[in-house]
Amino acid sequence: MEEEQRLRLSTVYAAGSLPDAEAWEALRRKTTAAHAQLEEGTGTGAVMRGWLRFPAAYLESDEFARVQSAAAQIRKADALLVIGIGGSYLGARAVIEAVLGRHYNETRKVFPAVYFAGNSISAKECAELEALLEGREFYINVISKSGKTLEAALAYRHFRAVLERKYADQPGEAKRHIYATTDAAKGALRAQCAGADWDARRFVVPDDMGGRYSVLSAVGLLPIACAGVDIAALLRGAAAAQAAYAEPGEDNACNSYAALRYHFYTHGRKSVELFATYEPSMTLFGEWFKQLFGESEGKENKGLFPASVTFTTDLHSLGQYIQEGERFLFETVVTFREPANTLAVQRCAEDGDELNYLAGRKWHDINRAAFRATALAHQKGGCPSLHIALARQDAEALGWLIYFFEKACAISGYMLGVNPFDQPGVESYKNFMFALLGKAGSEETRAALAAAYGNDIFKED
Ligand code: PA5
Image (cartoon, rainbow, N blue to C red; front, side):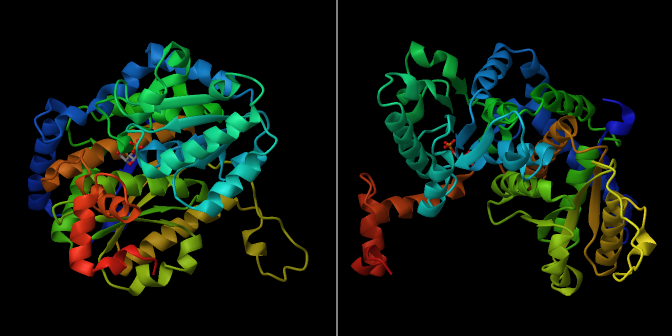
């Protein structure tokens, strides 16, 4: 990747909140130690570092070629339904929207529409998706490492039945329209797609990669390729970042970002990191960011709370709070230097809206002025911004950005003293949910709930 294409981290809009020279020295030492833990595999959860050296190697792998050929088959259809939740869908959806736009399904010309199911238990949403698929040829890509995640399993059961009804008079056809991405050897979904006839339609969630670090594996790459995004470019961008951030030198922006957010958390009394974008098509990327950092850092009563905003939209809703509310926020703003197009403001003879002073100016430049003005105002108001700039909003840059955040997140977890690769807390609500639903094996939790709340807890509110 050429020098001007690389990610740049700027602290211009954080002036006044930055560490002094002595604090920087201490931060550097801490970040370098966390970087070494990650690279050498001496930190907790080290077995889950498969993503660290994955992008460059995967480009050359047989599975990468298989993903490309599966995508070529799926692209012949009208639609792809991706079934999965959390790390099993957010990355793919984020990249598709970031590269192709939020309205991809309406604006696409040759590639299939891509819909996402199994990321909620909403009956309304499920029915809406089924109606959208009515009368169209569609494939399913069900993605679940365990195969037991309730949301994904419910949706898979439902849409598999839709396919079976559709192809009732063509034996084997429903199954031929399903691709599964799951554990290599175990789990409920793996068991459902055992057998040689699944071999070409089964992909692996790598054992050494948690869901939130898996977007650059088959988990994300198959749906992304189906939408027509250049997945080789995505991996090339990530591989370039892998090479750029391998050493912990002072020019390592990934380490500097981890150091600065740690500084804000420990010395700046900041407890919320706002991922901010000025591109609506990056809103889903903010969702991916929140899962990555939230599940990796939020444990043992520690961690920055990751939130996200899309500007300038949210300046008209949350802007007031960010400017003058409680001072526990800092922003991580991602921008793209090159305009996506040449859209410019037209001159208007009557100038009733008084916009002629902008005539001839590109929307992109006006958006950048909005970013700079907002960052200045927020900095003045006590909400500093770290600015991450990339050349353009394309697959290569997205690959770089994904790897940048993944590595910074793992380093941040080690700096905080937590395991950045587990998520023990997500089981709590599931235990109660299964107890309320009467799942076999939840008897002990049911008894504990009855003792604490009485049997009314099992009735509808
Ligand atoms: O990051 C994670 O590990 C989670 O978000 C999982 O991806 C999510 O819970 C889905 O799990 P599974 O793939 O087993 O269905």
